[in-house]
Image (cartoon, rainbow, N blue to C red; front, top):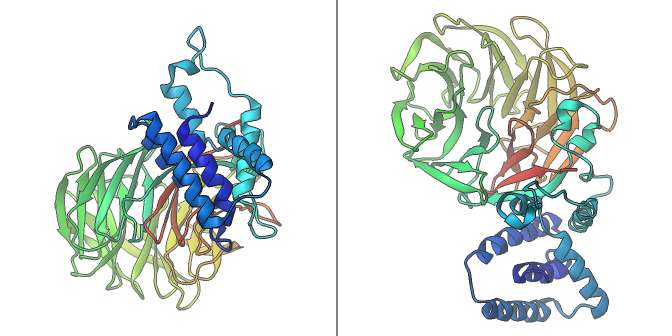
Length: 485
């Protein structure tokens, strides 16, 4: 017999189609969040009689609110199937990690039957029943490790089983940035306009918030992990940057902006993490020495607008900066002195803020040109080719998304694919996470994740692409788990 919390979830799932008929994203988020809270509450050890009483009352209240369901027999059968199929990937992972009964006689993990994944697919279909015509839905035959093996399509490799966890500690204030630690599968951080940064650990289950970094007096606009993940640097609208120790969450140093302006973005120099580049609201880019707390001589330059986005190439010799006037500037970075030399300027679109820049040396075996991925409030995601050593950009192609006003960001998928095609991921103001194949000539959309109830501002993969995190303008952070075979 199913546990009481699963029976409660089944009752909720039966009535879920009646909730917000014109807002399917909310229903998706509701049922997943409900599953997470019920699972956590089940560990509190409440008396079984009390749980059964709650189950009866819950059913009565839902019946009064939405009316009785037709065909009780069919509803009950559907309810039982939902109990079996509504168990998320996290549930299955917990079974194998924490439940000794999930181990065979010799201590090996039992294999999960293919039928259980078919049931999960049925649940996925149920929660996406109101999707727009032509939209892309996750398939059920993908596996993270295959991204390196290259024996499946991109659509299969970027299929997701559902929500792994939802973090809501920053709810009511936007989370403009979420990032996994470098070369790490389970450490995640996110910053909020409430002025704090959360450091989270996803394993062992349940995922937890390890530290909340407080000190900024206004919203945190951006942050970055150092190469070794031992420190984070953050920028804030309070005109300061702070250096934090990731191990215990203490603030090591506070550094004021040289211009006394709001700081809007930051990035580490990839080879020398003693140097950090910041962009501010007075149109300036500064190279800062975080050991001395001072800007580097010759390491400053002015743009045409507020600096919203920064990105280095992998060797750290080229820096791109985007502003709110629609321009992207390239700079030559002197590795010995930290000096910046302005090289090229590209006007993406006059007056359209450039909110995200991501650089990649090789996209895939089929796309060997160094590339730049840019969001610029044009209702498009733009892919540029880097054509010379001064960072000159040439538009390669664009992908349709919804972005007209929010600071949406995008990323290249971290694993190099050895099949034809390569994938990029972006947030969007339609409250979805979009995946595109940059090499596919037609129908480039690979997948679309629905579940947020506000514009999706940022996305981040962990190092092996088994987990994807996305954050939105309402303060919600969703961690999605790649579907396993």
